[in-house]
Length: 229
Image 1 (cartoon, one colour):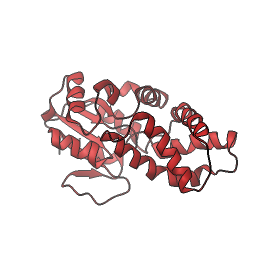
Image 2: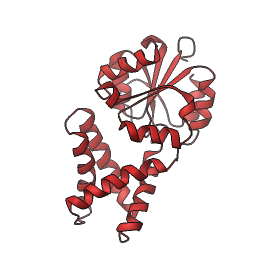
Image 3: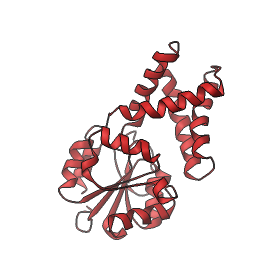
Image 4: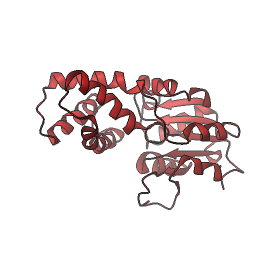
């Protein structure tokens, strides 16, 4: 479908290749077993996951800071569970969570297989809004670093997806042209609409088969990319 013109494929990381929710549950499970044995990680993450996504959306559009994001997603989750926790405890938990999160290496099913396949045909890259130090650890610890020619993060670019400047930064770093590029990601605003507005063709990774508000190509499983690229 896209094969004739594409030279460079850009991936989002969290929720696209790296299974954020499963790895997040493992990080919280370690924290809770060590410090809060009455809290069950799976139940907590069911509350935390949508709150974290909402906080990231605010962060994407510069409505909260990096520090506010780390605090708010935990505070709001505990408030939702009616669990009393101090700001000092939240601050420590935030630090522990960031430390433990990249220790876990669960990727979405088919991730390595499709990266291996695409790597033989294209130059592969990452564009992520995640915090640089943590994202590099995730990529290295999950054994996928060798697939990527470049990694662009929001701290490096000075802006976050969907800001067009991060896409331009990624293209410049990759020495690529937008008409020869594809962006693959799970976020309609950041990855799909952001890429479209900039002029890069997107593919929406949609494992939950959500209704898509835009006329874009979508895949429910990463292996489907083999039929498109």
